[in-house]
Image (cartoon, rainbow, N blue to C red; front, side, top):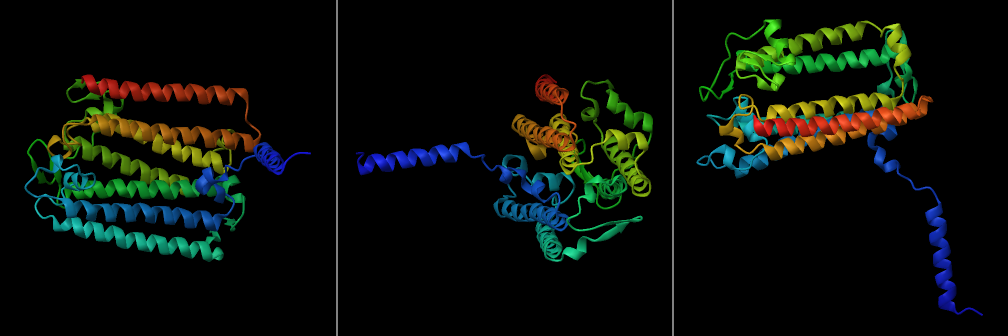
Length: 357
């Protein structure tokens, strides 16, 4: 007859075996993806996330202001947010504007948080019309309707376009931005609008000849502001187009209408921007040495890691969306692997190239 300790040990082993044989729940890894089919909760989480970003920006700006030492060069103080504000022309002469900007962000975070709570607890708030279609809360039609998705894309593009336009107005009308060549903040005159010059940067053609850095080789504020002006125009016009027009038929056939796939495209866009920023980090026109310091390698590596994380999320959600729609195949895994190798090559190339330029 077995002893009591032996029976207890056998019972524990049996319980462990049952626990390990059961499928583990990884739903917590999905984040807001758990809310794909719950429109009112997804919109609330979206607003709350934006509020959290606003709160972080405002609170950390106040934290950096409290540690700022006027007699020490800003590049030597290990700051993150204040150098960017200074680069935009704020606080170079009067640091009180930093506090005003921080408080504005904190107030905005409260508004966004209130909006998030409103949409979470008021489910009827997510019932709105797009053309002849009505999007209802908890309705999967949100992700399967091409006209609705085109409308949402159009609104996002318009907001991005106006954000770029605000930078242009700041540079040419409202105070100007910091010029590393002159070492002062001034209005930018003679904004470059020539499309040959602006779009030539995409192929490496710069004012000083061909440069493998492409857009990141820009060396004057006129082209920087002109590039933002073109981006603003394209985003606003593209936003209007997608708001008023449904996607073309050939695109509807190739596009996978699933919430995970749409999320994957957003993650791909953010990841691509992170990889592009690796090149710009070493550009002393947009990242002046006297404001951001000489050591750029740490920032470049951080941007590369963020790009890998975002693009990894893109691959994960894209494959999951293909699985949900029945389009997942061995070719999908092959394409994902090749995309991963290409991403690593881009990161290594960008950091290596900037190390020798």
